Image 1: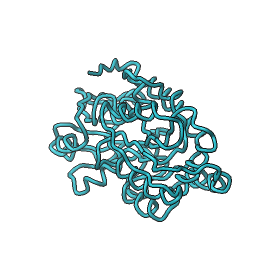
Image 2: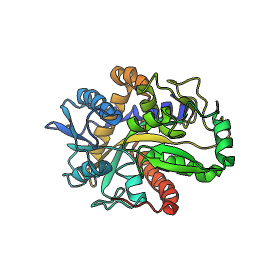
Image 3: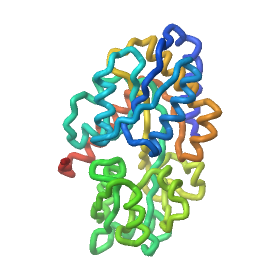
Image 4: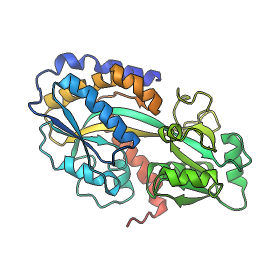
Length: 319
């Protein structure tokens, strides 16, 4: 965990003392906008368990998968702003969804109250085993000079891994061809077989695929990630300032009262510091963040601008 994350967590500690004016009188729903079993679902269930102990009420995880998380976000946007229906927010249904032109029944900024910036997971740059490179520098040099574009895998059109690679491609002048997949599993298989030559994927997915035959060349975190200490950052590999993460946050419906937001923020900040989460997040490839709602909201606006700039020239067509 870097200094920025530690300071964010420490700054939230006093909230628990001043945020006791509201307590939920019934169980809370945490809407996870993905199917059960994935990294975000696991995070959501751990957070729900730890936050319930702080709130004195059960926090029930409700999976609402579909349309890249949009269906789950719609549920929360339409819910009563009373603190009992919350969204495990990710870029997929908020910033990226708008940037790539999804038809949304909600405004990803105006229709939600940002509560707390929960976690970050860096992204790893992988290369196929048959590609004659052993570092990110060598891979980038090859991708700049190759006569034919190198095929790269993503976990789908308009996903984090697609847009992050396109940003890197534009910044570094890389010759790459996008090959979208429906999720990481099939992409890993084709990477190992050499049918695609590189990909970006979240560190939790890399850790889950331990033993896979591929080269892990760099990560997109500001510092080397504790779970992969031998893997350099992209900044160390000649791409200064290039950072990206698969983030999660907690959002409530717009117009949720400030005392309710403060109480929720305090409970989930305490959850991030709990033994349950600190013992599990490291093995999941996840770093607690803990920045407050104002900082989370500022990040959302910056994230939206970033992906609008990347997606604009791509002419993404969605079904």
